[in-house]
Image (tube, rainbow, N blue to C red; front, side):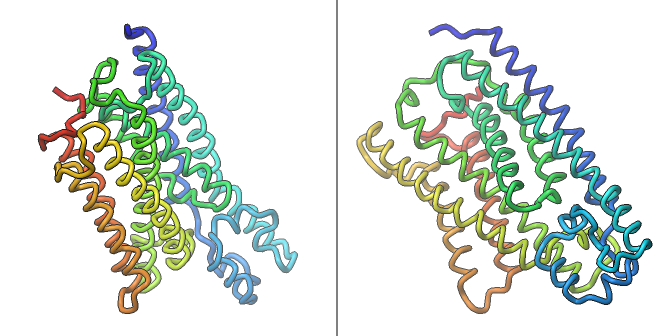
Length: 339
């Protein structure tokens, strides 16, 4: 089957366009995260006077509280109302613009995936470039879905930055011209095994970013250094850890399915379920690390920070599995598409 070079070219142009919008979204998110104002007790006497308000801020994000109409205006005084309106207008405008731009970016991003798909009339994950292109799109979609249930806009700066970096690598280091699948990948299992792996990567990546924020928030709660003053606008470290764990737990389940589906596909392709290929080994290593993470969280003696570090080790193993193993290790899974 011939390759539609025009659609492949449009896909590349849409990738670049999405990167530009991601970059602008990252800037606005950064203004919100680092340039906004935290909710201080001095901004309204009622905030300090009413413990219930402080407790609500600990359970939910301070930024969500600021977005609510009349936030901080419990007494009805003019000074409190003015402070709340100022906080609402100045602290969250960047987040709202950043999220709007992120929606525009994902539209362009998904369009690039679709045009790449139609240019070769097959699934858009036949090599490393296409995997990154699809995985980053799924990651942003997962973020936006979670955003409808929980205010996690404080992740926007790092999420959009990570996607921007990944797309940059996709069109440079990992770039592969549009082409048909190699015979070893031409199986219906590619439409089962790989999408679940992509979803797992998206879930585990967002969980890891939350783990980083959890560690920083713990430090800010204990010592409150000046460099981490922006962490006052985030939920408590306990809330961050809980959300990170939830995403990692789901990601572990989907990664387990990825491992099982890969073994079944291996039996179909090579008449054996397991052959100690480098890719198979590292996929199992990732599974073991996240199994240890889930076990450590349920074990007494492991503090939240140590568990978060184990989460970061897990995502580092995922990245190593995708990059170093795919590029530098020879084996039956050498499908990077790189020469």
